[in-house]
Amino acid sequence: MEIMVIGVGDAFSQKHWGTNFLVRTPTGLLAVDCPDSYFKALKSSGFGLRVDDLDGLFLTHLHGDHVNGLEMTLAWRKFVTQKRLRIFTTPEVAEVLWEGRLKASLGTMYDGNEFKPMVLGDYADVVVIPWGEPTELFEGLTIETRATVHHIPTAALRLTYQTQVFAHSCDTAFDPELIHWLSQSDLFFHEANLGPAHTPIARLEELEQGIRERMRIVHYSDHIEFHVHPSLSFAREGQKFDLP
Picture 1 (cartoon, rainbow, N blue to C red):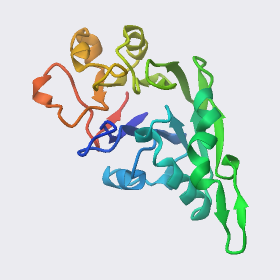
Picture 2 (cartoon, helix red, strand yellow; picture 1 turned 90 degrees about the vertical axis):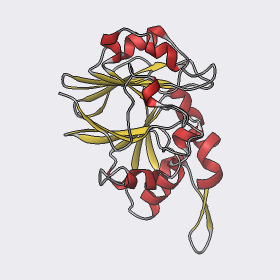
Picture 3 (cartoon, rainbow, N blue to C red; picture 1 turned 180 degrees about the horizontal axis):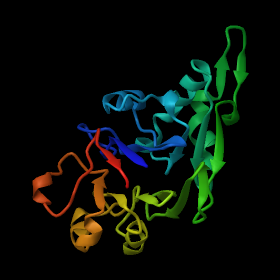
Picture 4 (tube, rainbow, N blue to C red; picture 1 turned 90 degrees about the horizontal axis):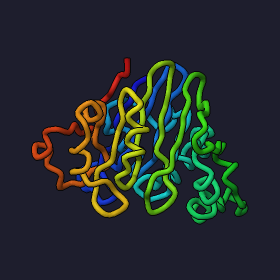
């Protein structure tokens, strides 16, 4: 299992793409989240991958820095390359994804003669992932989700392929039980940001060394100075992790 980092920034970053990454196994390529300027972010990563290469996309929640790129990704794959996308997400996101996010821009299309009403099913196949139940995404790749403490329903995730396990906190307030759940992995990403619905970086510095060694910080602010936090490792854009 390969983890390819596309973005590491927060919602307000002017230095980085919003936090998102790709997970590749021999059976498929999964994107996790789809932020602003997604086409450009993929190109700038240096991995040589495009939106047409995705076999599926997992949406953690509906804040713009995690989902703003979805509209044009769906439009491109429907009208240009005719490649439907599988969207995996939680019940709460699936319930409002169309009416609350995409319908205003994708709900009507003009074909040169008439205006045609559209529905989400015209663009994508949405697969609802039950909370806390290991679910197969592609052959051999399973996902398990866990709710985080954030402003809106948000999912942390744990991906398993054979004996390899990768996890991601997504956006969350500091939650020791969540960190314990995430740390049952070979590698995990954890956010660090400001405000009561995010995790103070100082709390992550307090974790035991064995956990910190398997953790990489994402979703960090532009003002972060890496040298001030020598006990922590930060994920970088264009970085690839190959799990054993």
